[in-house]
Image 1: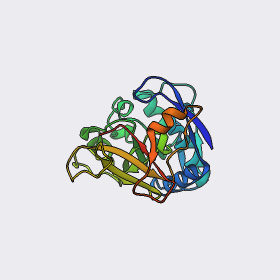
Image 2: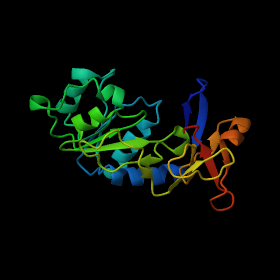
Image 3: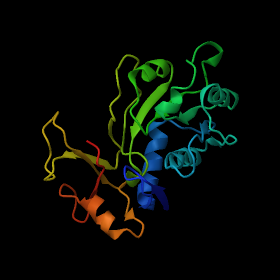
Length: 233
């Protein structure tokens, strides 16, 4: 379906090749989870070089919504609030670091059209959840590029719920927390997060050695399936 370059934790860009099956499954599940409908207005906040832009584009096209592409940013603080208000944005994916620059959504800055707010790419502080969850769907999403944008997500987060978890897997996705021998760890124990299922990418473009190291045989899935080693604990 596409190749998306990511540097991950190494700082060296590598092309991730994503299959149509994973993209189609993700887009359908995301449009449903984020409740995107015809007539909605989705903000393209992310650069096309970042896979969050795939989310913004695909849920819009699949749902018959409008993808709003503002002039070049960066959009932060009052400027981003103005874009959300003036363009009557109903759905936006805004990383916590950018969301923290916005004024509190009160008074003439309440953004009544913004029904669904998605956070991801980094941990979301509890105070941001408390500031933004009231009166709208605030959903935390997690996923490496190698797992087709999103591997797990929460439901709508409540005010006062604390720091949000990464949530549960998408419908076509499996998550495993494994030790160094790829055995499941006990509940509450530390282990590495592995992602399996249809969303796992094919590998790295023209990087067979790295592909073999990070995309490994799935001992818990059907024959021939693979797990992606996220490196996240």
